[in-house]
Amino acid sequence: IISPPALSPRDRRSTADDKSTLQKEQSSLQLLKMSSQATDTVIGMMDGAYFVGRREILEYFNTLLQLDLVKIEETASGAIACQVMDYLFPGSIPMHRVDWSARASHEYVKNYKLLQASFTR
Image: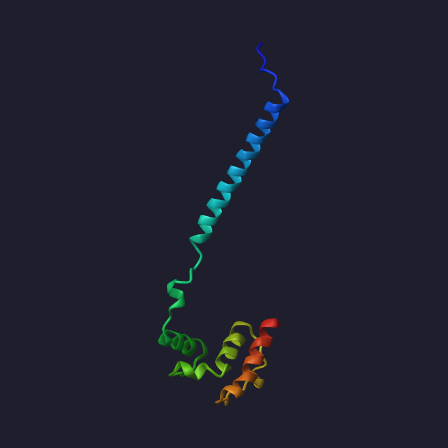
């Protein structure tokens, strides 16, 4: 029976270093595989989802909330945003407090405060 040659302490360290290096390389490869899989589903800043036209947005709001918006500027008061939030998360916004008649930017603040408060609930 031939036994393997005895390893000197120096050889043992290099073998352990080799194993450690191999483990690091394997874990790096696993991370690389995972990151490449994840990037397949990530939407980048130049994705078409970020370039949606006004008509599409208005159509979405009109269909979702059964409205008749004609201009995107009609959503500036924040009332529509409050309504969308309440649609997604019912009861998150006290809709009776939404100011539907807000016409000036200083009047919009009330609606946006309601919207902001709904994010913390």
